[in-house]
Image (cartoon, rainbow, N blue to C red; front, top):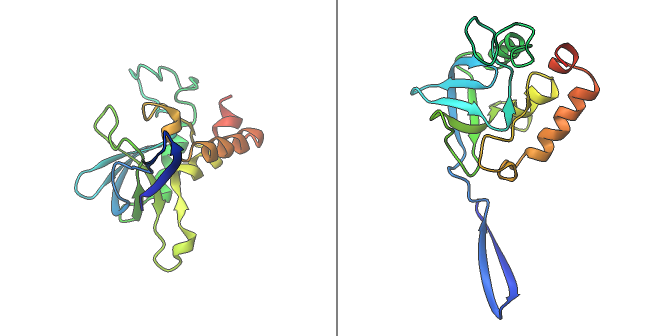
Length: 175
């Protein structure tokens, strides 16, 4: 799965450069619980943060970033969590793919996630992108050191723009 790009005529030497050097190979897992609009627990105790998306926080008293229900940091947080819970009920098989960094600052696995459809493999649902298209999350490019490390960043930005232009989800309710 790794691609090797060979540059020619570089100081008279052929220099191989490794690209697509992801931190781990794609793998399947089973969902045990949805924690919030962008965090999921898997069998074995692994906690996954969806890479490249940022769902609003769920409002509760004492939350520093979400001190009122009217805050844009928490507006639509419950709706995001509910959507993800319905999309990924316990027992759902998912496929994880990774980027350059596998772990975030809170020791959560950073991953792209698809719902696996055993009957129709071509119909997998890309959860990260669906959250953006449906207006349940914003593009979050601070998951890794630099935004260009998020390989789906342009697609994510397009999905967010679609949701914004249609005023769906948080774009119709919070902004």
